[in-house]
Length: 407
Figure (cartoon, rainbow, N blue to C red):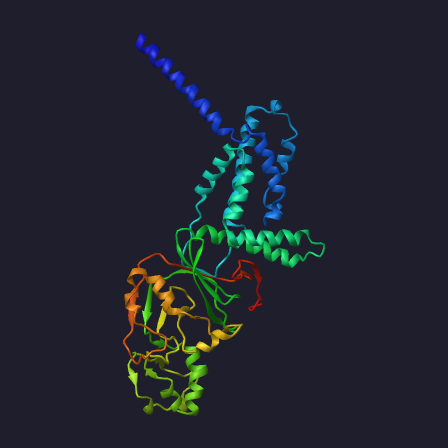
């Protein structure tokens, strides 16, 4: 009997403690009117934070603040608690990940959004009654977002405000929020098409930056995500059919010397080399061309001495180039879609890390002639983003507005 009473008492003690813990957990917001007021104020300030007020149905917060706490039933309080929590979670996830986020034609690398991380931060700052400080932390942790928000505020306060400019700043702030979140703990390559520039991030730090040459408007470079897994030293160039038939074939038909001067191999359907002298070039056309071209490795090669492939449906890749003079141009949009690198060797070494010894003897100026290609594995996770962002930053971190080259 005594044992039974002891167990009965322990059972009810457990129930009471559990109920108390449950109440503490369920009423994180309803027990903190000051935090609800702060959240309501922040939601009204959404445009100044590069977010849209209509993302957050917060009208009920205004009315909630007018109702005395004593008049709310426990059931009503629980429903309101869940509504406020969902609203706050949505708002702070947008501050962390951006809304809207960038979209890509092809997503070959799935970037993870760590939503649990945001939830833990929100709980921590809520307990300290300092969710405004969390907003400041999130906005200031990304140097790009911090710069854009400062410019956005200036534009919104201006009497001669430009709606199109405000819309662009708002969009870019959210895209850079997403970028800041996903680049943590990664060696991430980002190519911004309008800037014609490549940056490699190690966390928040830019480990490498260089000019690139991108697709001309008629053959634009596509936006995508991918993962770099290999690079190729001294690559052959397997000429795309469109280039072979529309650009090379007419020149060869004018003068066969063009074929030899371009250091090409002519391949049949079985990838066997065909003697160019035995071919009736005049009989060939865009519609009838049962061959393919392969350019030999060497300093003359269109891909230079380094090619960095990645999976994508557009046959795009990063590569060195034999046309170095193009990097001196302000508008560098000359390619058929692929990305030409200003400093491929330095980039390749960064990707390979300790495994970069194979590149130590490489020099852009050669001499390289018909050297066999060599594949090297990238032994780290190295995602690639190619995006189209009309806002970038100069050496001082100031906002730069870019021309819409693919408009």
